[in-house]
Length: 311
Image 1 (cartoon, one colour):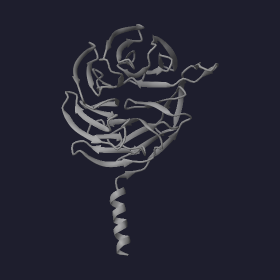
Image 2 (cartoon, one colour):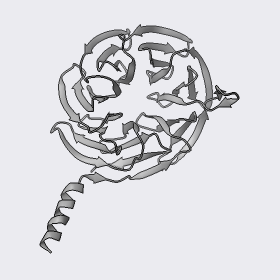
Image 3 (cartoon, helix red, strand yellow):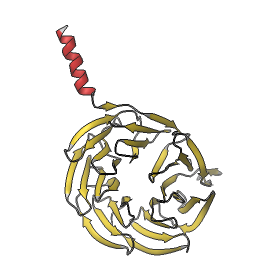
Image 4 (cartoon, one colour):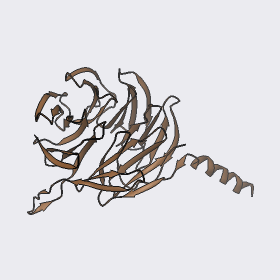
């Protein structure tokens, strides 16, 4: 009996930090990107569909990208690689697999004049009409959709583009690269204000930017937390490549994919301790977004997104 009690006590200690999905929302193809502006949640998918998730966490399809020619003949669905909603919620910018920038807003869906032969890796809404576009070739472009023109185009080093995130006021962008460096960009001028090298040893898959703080998801199995002036705040180790990471609005909490089982660890950043492990995904994580201090949503290469609550 004593051994049984000790075993049960051990199990409680081991699994006390595990959290289960609060809500799972099914989709008809994998979610590729998620955007949230504090008011509404939007999803882009591998079939090129754009969904709005309502307050009851039900998905509503609001647009679909046009099909593109297949290499074996005929037409096929294209991926909606990236999307971002403006702060007002009036405009959604979507980067298509075909290299076009699309817009959803005011009940309308349209293809803009922006077209690239490179892959659009990231779009970040600056306003209802201005968007920052990151290309796989590490070019970053500020594009004005009202004027149909580039405001500027800059080259962010020679390494492949990893990810990009905006500060809350959209005045600063953090651009991560395959070299493990983070570039701090002044959005208005297009000038690089600083470069922080060796934030990770190699490719940074994802970066998030909240409350003057950055978190990375790295190929080196590390999630690094730094200030936007380059000071190290914390570093968390994973057991596998870390494909996704995110910060809570205050940047007091961080979440990162940590192992081959696609679990998500939630950390208290000031104390540098793990406070929970979210278990429920069965495929590689590609996006984590905090909806508040204790709630976040995640997506993987599977036909669902999961909502979580950390108390």
